[in-house]
Image 1: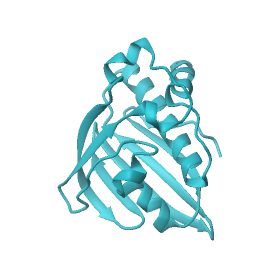
Image 2 (image 1 turned 90 degrees about the horizontal axis):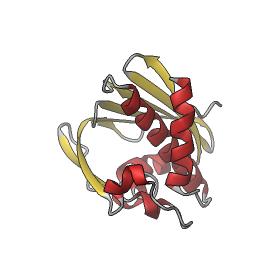
Image 3 (image 1 turned 90 degrees about the vertical axis):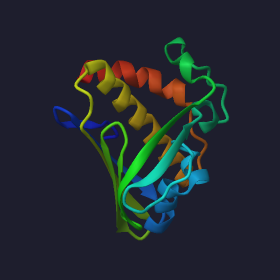
Image 4 (image 1 turned 180 degrees about the horizontal axis):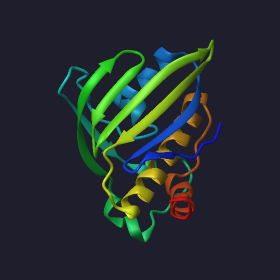
Length: 172
């Protein structure tokens, strides 16, 4: 499977990842604050329609390795906070949130211990630099999710993210 995201229309990107385990366990990594904090951002979530979702980002804590924050992202050195709104939740297979556009996490159990995650991020800002950052960000977070779910130690977020920004700059 190609790990790179695809631009499926001018303002929509999509990623696919194979994750080990059962769909119910992967669902927990989307909805449980502590587990989500291991690969993306911790924070409370109300799975009811129009429910609030907190996103507390601490990129340096996503790996045990020394991972200095790049100058470009120094404003995030102490973490950053954001919020989203749950548009739809159908446990354990679908989570749709309104966060910097519309983000859909679609889970499908495709084998006894294998889940296909399709992440679609719609309504992206119409800026090349913004899209490059979003592509590299999701790519890095999803790679960390694959590792964490499999019980492997992920690489440092910034160590992976920055080269991906350069790669996506050539792809877009």
